[in-house]
Amino acid sequence: MKYGFLALLAAASVSHAAIDLSANEQPLPVTVDPQAVAKIPVNYKFVEPGTLTVAISALNSPPLALLASDNRTRIGSDPDIARLLAGSLGLKLKLVPTAWEDWPLGISSGRYDVALVNIAVTEQRKQKFDFATYRVDSLAFSVKSTSEVQAIKSAADLAGKKVIVGSGTNQERILLGWNEENKNAGREPALPIYLTDDASGNLYIQSGRADVFFGPQSVSAYKAALTGKTRVVGLGPKKAYVATTTKKGNQLVFALQAALDGAIQRGEYQQVLARWGEEGEAVAQSAVNPPGITY
Image 1: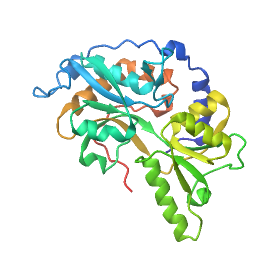
Image 2: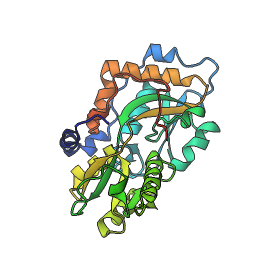
Image 3: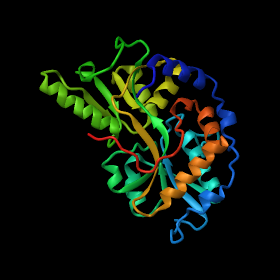
């Protein structure tokens, strides 16, 4: 990423410190966008008529997705983007909490119209899915605030470390690639630790059962600013675009792109990112199927 690292962390700290979760439980207003509505394919059949069914993360990964105070309603930047899409297209919204491993089959089999699970565009995924970008994302390495680790910039910095990653994610692929690099250089590879919930990750880091968390920069910066128990010590090596994800070739992606572009022009999109501290990850306009990460 071409962010100044210290500036990015400083901005993240200020933004996240100002987040009001109680206020953020209230949906933001959305304007129906006739130009976006006109781009809905005539022959497209929604999972439920008149409703945009969106797969959303079932995990608590603030600021991307988390439970509201009622312990039932999903809030966060991804649910807010889903509301922007549905509202702009004149549709009702149905959010379906989904495990990361389940969204590809859910989209392919027609259980969801759209997946918003902080999905980065990759060349491999573009073979099966269509993407309309809505955020520039970076991966980050974070450690316990008292850790001796000061910086992670290359494979050598992770040699022998116990690293928390999500299965099937871009960060896992990067870690496994760096492990091969370490092996070839005669260094000890990192040990991947696969966890599926945020609470376990926090416990592993604080107890010393893991050395490093490797995941979305927005999540890592949020945790560091909110609790002070962790700190970000490096950014991942690849730039990514996070995008709405739909089944390849159904043409719905162009309506989603138009909905996002309209929301950007009206300032509604910027309101979403601002209230979750993600202003530094904004896109100027949505792109359909841009160049993706390759491995």
